[in-house]
Length: 165
Image 1 (cartoon, helix red, strand yellow):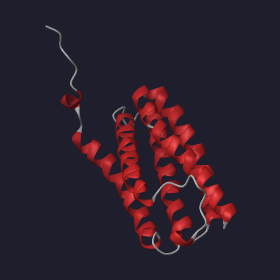
Image 2 (image 1 turned 45 degrees about the vertical axis):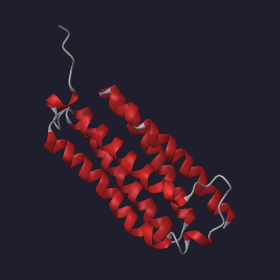
Image 3 (image 1 turned 90 degrees about the horizontal axis):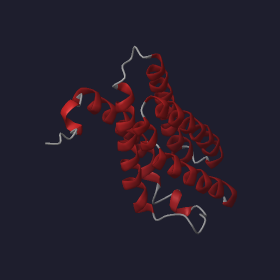
Image 4 (image 1 turned 120 degrees about the vertical axis):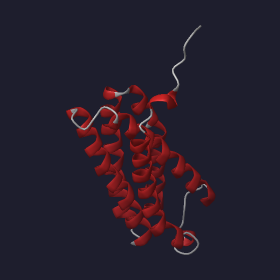
């Protein structure tokens, strides 16, 4: 009989829920600044033709925050005493700050230029995170790839919105 490793067998639910709360909480904070201005300020902006419809953003970001949380959880499982894991988790929290700050800069302050500067920093931090997480747990590094791709796209979109407005 072949024994299969079951993912949920050894889950530390407190850490997983904490990682989910942190990531989805950051997304929730961002949405507080985003949602009210979508039908007003954002609707009035000139956007490039490749700009996705507004209804795409919430499910994409929710999925990405969940993937980020699972990646964080996998690294957190290495333990706070593990220096590389601790460094990765600290960079993760810093990157999450820049992620949330983008919504404030772009939507609340109506400043695509400052948001563009922020998203460049965010993009670089995601690269660092992918490298650090991959070194600790390949799955954690892979889980950040969709996030990296989406933020790459969002950076281009942010740039064109800045140029067009």
